[in-house]
Amino acid sequence: DACGQTCHRQRRLLLTNHDLGMPIPSKELQLGLDFSARLPELFGSTEMGEDVLRVLNDYLRLYLRIHEDVNGELPHVRAAVKWAAGLR
Image (tube, rainbow, N blue to C red; front, side):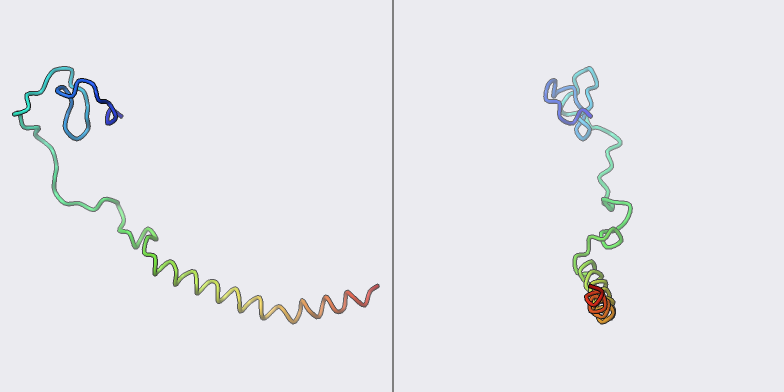
């Protein structure tokens, strides 16, 4: 939570900005910093739904299925409306 702090810059760690309470000479090496390449997330972007084309294709498949279902029910709805109009 110290990442936004700006006071006592000479006492703060490089990546976390944590205040050690004592000055760190600028020529000192901060051991234990891991700069190896890693995935930024536990899952890749495609597994989390960030692949736009995949999401769009899924949407289009669902849309077409719903559209077909609605078109299949439309004759029944029209018949029900016609029948209900005769009840007056």
